[in-house]
Length: 84
Image 1 (cartoon, helix red, strand yellow):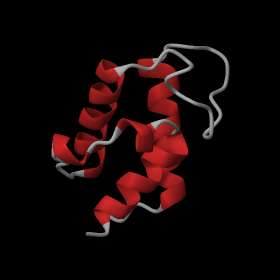
Image 2 (cartoon, helix red, strand yellow):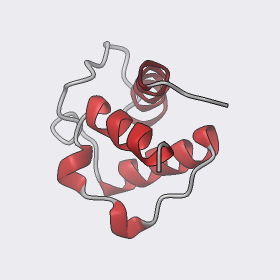
Image 3 (cartoon, one colour):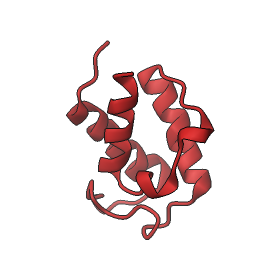
């Protein structure tokens, strides 16, 4: 099943806002997640979601926190990884 960038972004935004950060206020896709309370455990939870939702396995060695600090960055990473 193909997932375009907008579909990945929407799924990530909803999951991070509702399941990880547990907040009622809307999450911007370019908001710094770590400034919003995200931590390494949060990133782990999101990667488990990504692997289950999109059917990919991402080695920990490929996770660079600076490159995964916003919903947009995570979505682009996942979209690019799916293209490999």
